Length: 164
Image 1 (cartoon, rainbow, N blue to C red):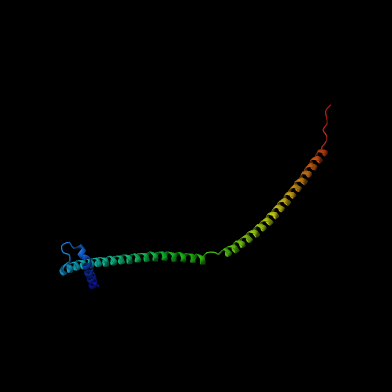
Image 2 (image 1 turned 60 degrees about the horizontal axis):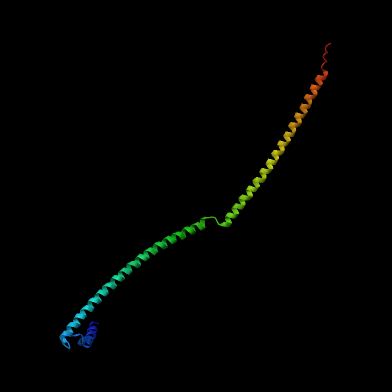
């Protein structure tokens, strides 16, 4: 590659140099070789610096890729953990249909208990009402007997004399 650059540079210099040279109309072979070597050295330095820059850029890109992969790996770990949590919840938590069946069973039991309580309260109220009637009847009979006894006692008593 260097040989090709040297030849191209020499041909270019021979064509361009006469216009640029102020000391002599045509440069000597020695001047041409000096110019070629100088430019060859510049091109080599430029090529070397470009190689170093490309190597540094590739190293930086490689490091960036490694960091991005590590970040992606962390993210995927957390996503997998979240999926695992959701799967655990799906297997352990109650489904909507199961919950509906259980609530329906509880509602049926509550309805049965309410009906039996209403019947017990009705019986209790009926018994209380019956007892109330019986006590009222006994009290009425007792009142009549006391009234009749008092009336009988008053009638049997001797009348007191009224004074003159």
